[in-house]
Length: 293
Ligand code: R5P
Image (cartoon, rainbow, N blue to C red; front, side, top):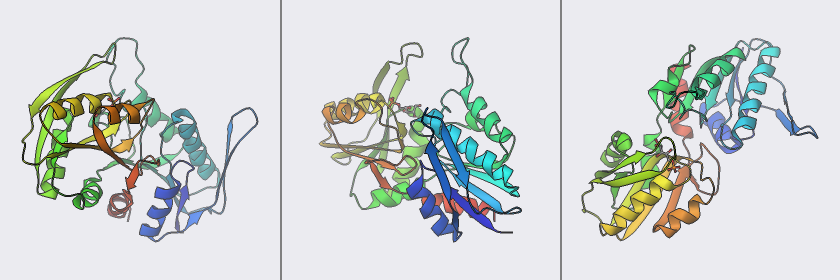
């Protein structure tokens, strides 16, 4: 019996780093498209009785990357592996963890049910959107909070004030600021559920540095960061940086943030892109070793 790791196509860099940190071998994964667009997945080498870790981020195209993860799990089950552990660096559809409006789908539950139906028996999710989104799993589900990796990356960037662009993210900003020995603040944000439009005002932001680093769990349209950056500029900050764990950067997010005065954008490798500046592999490896020795 051996523990092996299968790297999905959306997590090639993080998957390999994780295998190296865990000191385990990766198995071959064939992934391609049929002419009509359907995905084909084949796992090589995993043997009956092996324990297999699948690493696949559910970033864009979310539905396709989810389907590939489900196919990887189905393929592993077909090979008779002993257990299937999924490491999901970015868990899509988790923002819909409640029915905010009547008639909406509960997508966080939908994903959990499908992963379990395909044989996933344990799951690690990096920086999950909410506790509610994890509550739909009946198999062991471990959140991986990569604050240590984020702080390590920011440590070399000098003095700053860490700002949560949303009061809900204040504990993260406080934790990050504490690790960096700098001050922290927050913006009060509210979002119209029907239109998606965001309104914001400064909650409390100390002016102990000319540099503000906005840090969120994810940046999607960039709307949250744009509002916060405009407020920080009006408050007199000379340089504004913005980062997140999950960099979705949809539509014209980069351009909008740049126009709002953000001069540096960074994200982790839970979604691999040109904005990826640091890896969460160390935090994931530590969590896997602890929960799945
Ligand atoms: C919201 O709860 C999240 O923490 C993020 O602030 C939000 O998802 C960012 O989205 P956007 O970039 O579209 O404003």
